[in-house]
Length: 196
Image 1 (cartoon, one colour):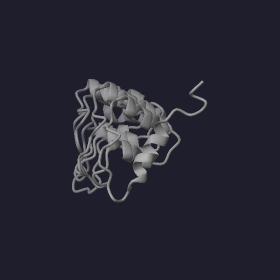
Image 2 (image 1 turned 180 degrees about the vertical axis):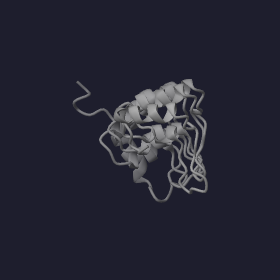
Image 3 (image 1 turned 60 degrees about the horizontal axis):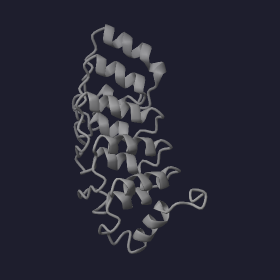
Image 4 (image 1 turned 30 degrees about the horizontal axis):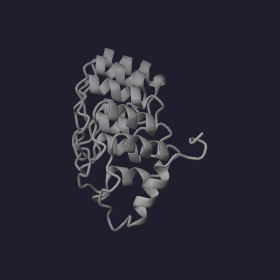
């Protein structure tokens, strides 16, 4: 199954499942082991695999990314729906991968055209807007990480985090510097169009 699967993969998935394929299989001795659910990028495919008893909590061999991390960082238009399905299947909204990144970190920094809807879905499920776990991006707050990411939705993501009470005065690493707080303010301030 390709990593960017979509609804056209459903007949192939159905054929594999009908032939008895293990829905939770992961290639042995692979450094980039991924389960079919981690590779699923469409909501339809996520639903099909969950219905076939795919584990929403099965992690890859080296990164310990769970399907919710993969869906949160996805650029698929239905990523927020996939998040909801995974959460309904008992995925953890604040689980960290091996680098310390949580699903909301993946979503807030993905730069996807759909990242705001995914961040909103995760916040609605009570993901923390103030995650300060150390991970490969350093100790910057989630808000600063979101602002630093590139993408058309980053202003909307920053606004969502501020509305969810993200700490706008959280420590900023030397890599971002003092300007990071100002960038956060600029990104979260209403635009002239929003002011009416």
